[in-house]
Length: 294
Image (cartoon, rainbow, N blue to C red; front, side):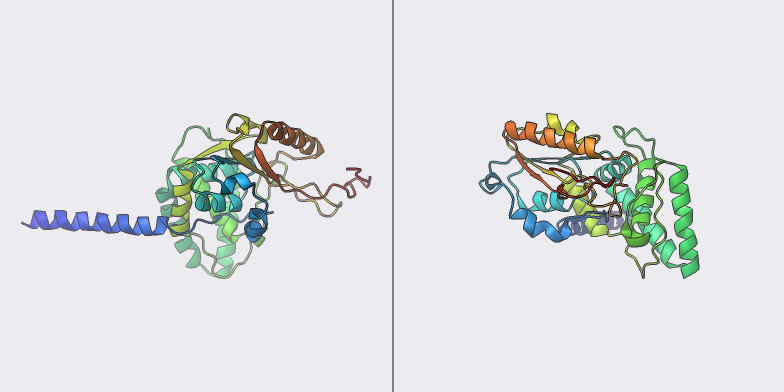
């Protein structure tokens, strides 16, 4: 009799956990990383520029080759159910590691973030600063050399550390030096939320129908066809010598890359793909002081 009661209790607890997870997974998914150039505040303006085919349900695929924080991807994935397949990519292996970890093992990630959050908030202000710099040092001493095609448990710890640094560093930036080392200083935030469990579960649910790749934007070519809507949001071309931020990855995105992207855009356009691109206006001054013609 006692054994039956324990069994019934365990089943009840599992059902309750499932229901909780279901409710949390139904919450609106939003970017879980703060990323320079994020489009969270521009969603309405961008949506007004969407191709008409997305409203007539002719678009079946969506691709975003410079995923970053993914604000537009999350918006499209939750508001256009006619789209069946998604593709996101980036040249930054750390960023792709994070997305793949959330996709493949969000519960282990949540467990580590919850522990980290508890440890952090029990510290004094000075101890929190030291905790941050210790995490940053360990992160940089173990630069990602993972095979991103085969999931490994070490991905979870790496991802948890990156999310922690992103939530507690200055201004929530992700910036690296020429060696690929994370170099943003401590942010001294007041009670930062390090583990947003409902959102991470919602994001993970969306990523189950998403192909995630680490690589150049042209790697998306095999996924894209005439029924695809593609949004390009590359690192912007600097408008002046002092307005230059292109340090999302140790791989730089200069003028040659901008020209290659323009050619790729034209190639896809000729194929009938529906396209949208954000960038800075190029009729400006080059960082070297020369006037840009067009």
